[in-house]
Amino acid sequence: MAVSKNIKNLEGKKALVTGSGRGMGRCHALLLAERGAHVVVHDIDGDGVTETEKMIKKVGGKISTIIWDIRDVGGFKEMVSREGEIDILVNNAGVGGGGRKIEDIDLDVFNEMFEVHVRGSFFATQAVLPFMKRKKNGNIINISSIFAMGGHESISHYAGAKAAISGFTKSWAKELAPWRINVNAVAPGFVITDMTKASQTQQEMRQREKNVPLGRFCEPIDISYAVAWLASPEAKMITGQVISPNSGEVIVGY
Image (cartoon, rainbow, N blue to C red; front, side, top):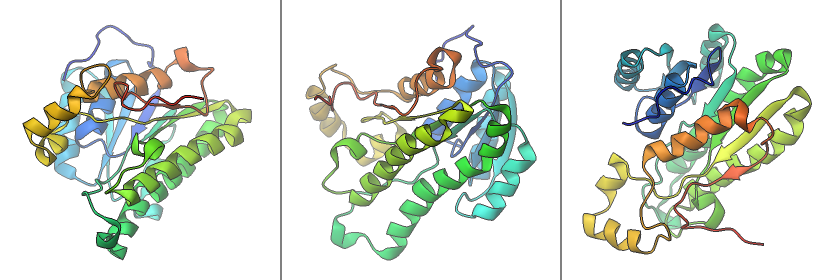
């Protein structure tokens, strides 16, 4: 997992990355640590948290951990409060859509989708606000999706949950601006991960890649670069925006 070296624009900051025991969340956590932040790695998967912790320590990063189910709101908020000062929140925790048609989405599947993505993001944000408001500074970065922008024919519950996160982003940006708390979202397009490799054949991926304007899919680090930039002082005047690294798959016009 290659990251840029010698950029330390997050020193002195503490960043909580939910769902960072694997995948893109792990990549976000590692890059933020590389750039000087003390990273709070969170996940329900203890083994995943341990692996991310090892990777961050290997690059000399500062780390603490929370192993908890984000759906347990009271317990999760208590764990976050023990961490004290959180300057940066990355609402990354999520579950996959599983390629289900409307008729195949039962109540349990629907509830899990919205409990993790929507409720999890909302109450994680609520947990960090007291410190950010006292300090009159903070960064909240929500992970949305390209499917919140254009929908998808077989994961409407996932697209709906991610659209809610985009709505949170714009509303929170307006509400929290008086405290100089920036709120933005990153909406990835198709990203090459172990999960996407398992869900599609090489032939299917190559065929889809031909239709991407930039001619290649994003890697996890491409999404993490957007997260790290939004967390940095360089983006201090950016709020209420949804940035979509998607290789040009979706280009929103006027």
